[in-house]
Image (cartoon, rainbow, N blue to C red; front, top):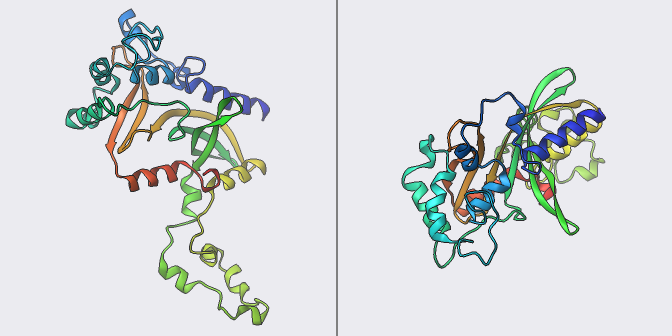
Length: 285
């Protein structure tokens, strides 16, 4: 079990670009291509961020803040189109142009920040659940720790766990409840709630929301759930006002490879809040 935990966190470190290899390179892959393609590809997530901000030269050399190219918006406007998956129609056209215009605005340019909490890693992982293989989605985010930072598990998604708690509705709370005079009967009518565990959550507050992260930790601690391996990794960025984009790794023998924007959406403040709530458990807010 100890070896599996070591493997689990080692792969996460790799995927996050701390060592320099994306998680997908652990699987067999083709040749990286020419030297030009190797320089052009975003080999690390950190490299994607530096290039997005124009903090790194095309050769891979970090730019000093005194360099005229550092955070240069004119150069960013030329470079950013190549930071997208150019084979994906969802990340091209007018939407891409509006996005680039927003982040390179002369008065209020937007840059990505590693320590900003509004970006998340999505790790698809295989587990063993009492002898049955299951796939879980783990969400991780950066949190300040001492003088540095660390990645924490912020939420978990599992079809089976989520099916235990269907979307609540007002009719359910009206049908399943304890009478306000239940205390006069020594709460003997609790047996009604406990005999029907399928609807037990309706006896909680209308503000109650299930904490799937705690359920995940419980299953791991009791040994019912055992980690097997990482399947894939991608990232979700919500740092930029009005925008959401997804970052995925593409292993191609072209210059349009490495970590690239694979999905782009213009979102309202409400939609962004909903996305953040999905990536973060109520216990980590």
